[in-house]
Each structure stands twice: as C-alpha cells, then as structure tokens.
Amino acid sequence: MPGRRPRRQAGAHDNAPRPKPVAGPTQTVERAVTIGLILAVLAGLGWIAGMIYTIAEWPL
Image: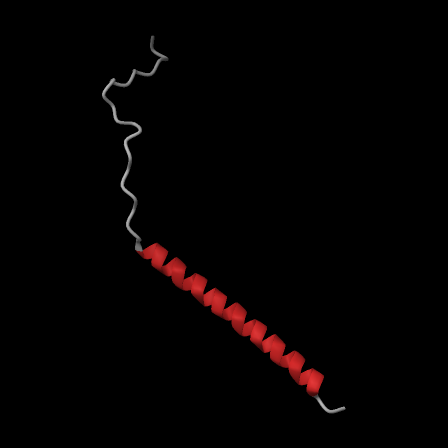
C-alpha cells in the first residue's frame, strides 16, 4: 500500500539511553546572566532600603 510507512527493524535502538550533554557555552553564559540579575536585584533592594532609612532619619 502506498500510504503506509515501512516498519522498523526489530533490532532498532529507539529507547537506548543517550549521553547527557556536557555544559556548553550557552549554560556558562546563562549562569553568568542569572548571577548578574541576582546581584542587580540585591543592589536595588539595598538602594531602596538606604533611601527609606535616609528619609526616616531626615531631620524635619
């Protein structure tokens, strides 16, 4: 029949375990970007806390 796909051989290794990929250059960049974003958020929170402290202690 022309519409049918050919059957696979009985010895085909479809579910053989594949090796895990080694940490490529994209994972290194992703890690650096994540660390940079975390540091930026911490710096922003510190700046906000400093502004609140300055306004709270400002002599009126």
